Image 1 (cartoon, rainbow, N blue to C red):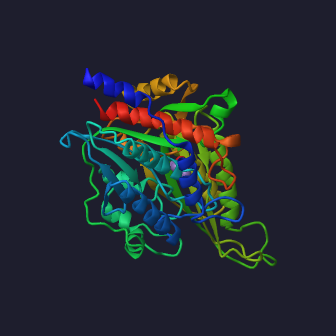
Image 2: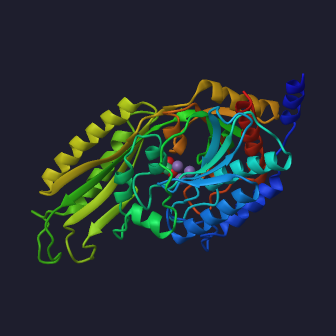
Image 3: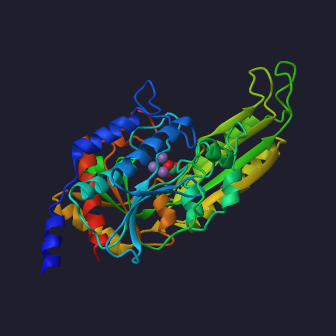
Length: 418
Ligand code: GLV
Ligand code: MN
Ligand code: MN
Ligand code: MN
């Protein structure tokens, strides 16, 4: 009887939308760009400042804060039965270069708002609730992405992760130490009963269909490659067009090939997002190019066969231009089909709150993909204005932020009390 009463009361709990907005606005000042976005690259001074603030907010609501060897920040809120596997939620504080004010940080501030709501209402849960900030989700300063959740679930090696370098040759391990976030707790998964990640959609579907809550059945597989070309530099004027070994020209054809192959499967995307040209002078024939390839699909096998086709075309192109080709597989994460029970919890929570929902697939990568490999996991999306993300104009309405966080609150309470 008592249990039933308690259950009734938590179903009526709601987060504080204003407080959530204030937290997000405060965080948006750290690394704010002139055009209204955020640049808070992993392990930068801005990342450190945001982490420090986050930790202080966790301590204010009596969370036990731990930092692991990868700099992942965990805030534990004890449940009645600490022996039971915990329920976790969180996302990432780092951003893209010239990124937005919502990608990542919304999932962290949303989980914090859930914690604050529980704290102020003195809600006791059966299981521990844990909030997390994963180090370097974006992978744009140090590749790959989602590296620290990858280490945490045992899919990536800690020391390999430490050795990843940025464009200036700084290692991830050094930078963790420099900002004071190389913790001592092993970056090793603890038992989890459920993991929910709240995030902006980063695409156009919810807006297109006029729905409030996105309920992904899973995340596409994500494959990253690095391509290196070497050729022959020369004075552009005296060197005839015939017989050049022009790396940038070869790369241009390879980029076309990526686009062409990615069109073969409906759900596949293939992108070259980063390119470095050497020596990068208008009157020198380029003798070195490094570019990246990102391939995603709901079918791992499709992404793999697409890559094989791309790689074959790359070789033909490289040979035709007399350039040397080296290809590296930098990173692969399998697709993540989320736990059906948790996905149902998200759908039901949206329903019970009177919010419309849309069942979909996530094309964006999330730490939840790795967590899903060791524990039941699911995500909650809210609409992105204009479907724009990884850009400074990235935006979601405060109302949707509040609604998404209410869904998270209900899901967390359900899972934490079973
Ligand atoms: C990470 O943010 C990705 O989806 O590329
Ligand atoms: Mn993100
Ligand atoms: Mn992102
Ligand atoms: Mn992401």
